[in-house]
Length: 33
Image 1 (cartoon, one colour):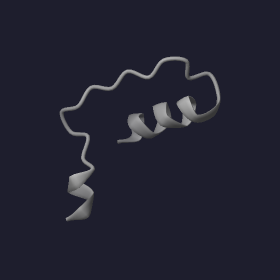
Image 2 (tube, rainbow, N blue to C red):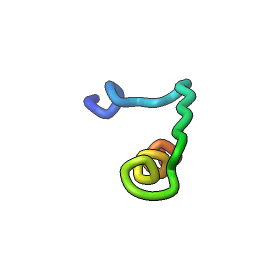
Image 3 (cartoon, rainbow, N blue to C red):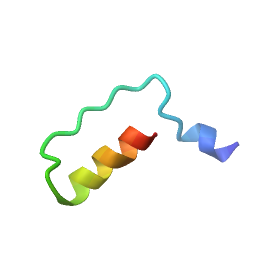
């Protein structure tokens, strides 16, 4: 399935400077993943 190609299982991500804007959206998106 296509979604498996974008799986973040087992991946650790650090997002800094996420008060507003794109970084905040990225942080929330990664948290939901």
